[in-house]
Amino acid sequence: MNFDKNGDPPASYDIINWHVTPQGAGEFVTVGHFLSSQGPDGQFHINMDRVVWGGGSRQRVPVSVCSSPCPPGTRRAVQKGRPVCCFDCLPCADGEITNKTGTLRNKLLTLLFI
Image 1: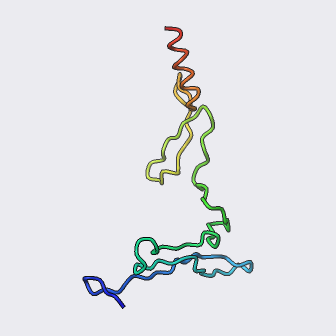
Image 2 (image 1 turned 180 degrees about the vertical axis):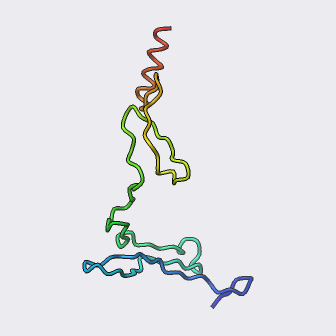
């Protein structure tokens, strides 16, 4: 057993994910672990195939549940006091557009007409 300069033992943590069974009961499932004694290359291990996100999804990157993407012609306006994934879609100001291709085209057209 090794101890650090403060006399503390190495850290060891299980990474737990809460799953809901088909019967509706909750269960905790170990999906990974952290061991500080294994050095920087072996400290953190997680089996992403075992991770279940909210709503029972097994997709790798969860989708924001706060706001959907803004449609063309609108821009994001952050909702004060809420997470950055929460926003309202407001119409763009006159003369502004939302995609980069269109912006470049408008600048080129402006240059051609000057």
